[in-house]
Image (cartoon, rainbow, N blue to C red; front, side, top):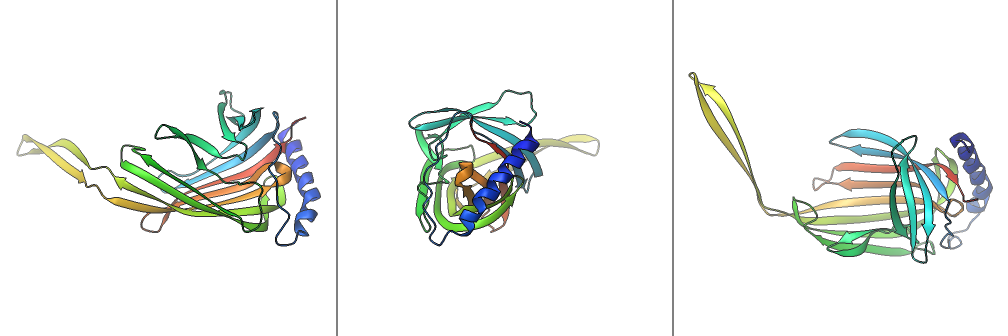
Length: 250
């Protein structure tokens, strides 16, 4: 099936399910964990905005390859690319896991089923020496189910369950010494110069914000936004993912 047909199919599903969402009272009916099957596939348009590299956009295809009693295994491939897909996994709630200090840890838990209006949950973890610059990082995010909100993405218009998360990341800088050497000419003679920059160990704290728009009929989110703010209160990163097409397993 072509992408155009997939997009049309998703838009048709949005039209079918929109009335039910629009008429749902507050609090809305709890949303149970979806049944994910091998062959379920989504296409997302992902936009990255950073102060350093500016703006870039890529479209990626996600397809489920295997579902076990505890995990969803899926492949991610840049649309139209001839390169092999990246293969990864999540738990049954689409939570992202990775090794933190040698232990598999949930680091992103955007959905906590059943979803009910006002429901909250928290993700918290501490990681030692996550990179060369930090002695440690400590991440905390508190999620809240806000209710029903209309959202429009390339796949169509949806009445989605919106979840928001606010949090912070605290860290301590590793002390470091950077030495830069060069030369300059003075009176016909070359003079060697040395510049020493020191980074003192000190704590830092940044803020995070996330929003997720989940649609039960799609079995996943139709849009997500992640924002990261520096210690000066200015946003320096934003990541947006929007559904382009959805194809359920046959």
